[in-house]
Image (cartoon, rainbow, N blue to C red):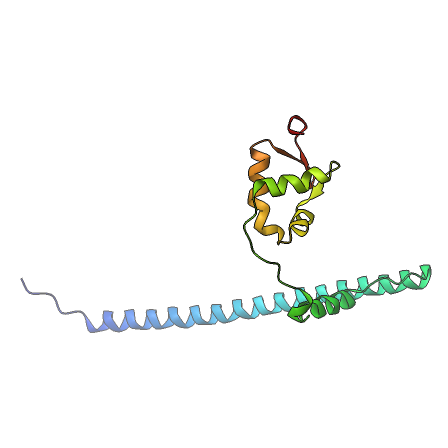
Length: 157
């Protein structure tokens, strides 16, 4: 069975329709991109306006109360300075094996409770290193956690 040869007029018609479709799609895409960019620009201006209003309100509050209110720009500058702080300002804590008993000893010294970072500080390690161990002690009901404070379980004094 031999295949039919395509009608040249139909073939040209399909090519024209396809070319028109691509041209129309390209034009619509361009319009959508322009609309998105305009929308982004409007949002950016609205955010800048809100930040400016907030900063003006903070300056007005400073004038009225005499108490310095930190502006958004000042907060951003402080964060930038903090990020650029030299590494030696934050000494590395020694990584070492910590036993459950060491953790329990520290918690016993603080019957009113002690926070996880403070436990780490007492042991001379970063608190992340002991977080799982302390969680295990809570799960084993040797330690109780109330808010962010860890205390010895009352039946384990």
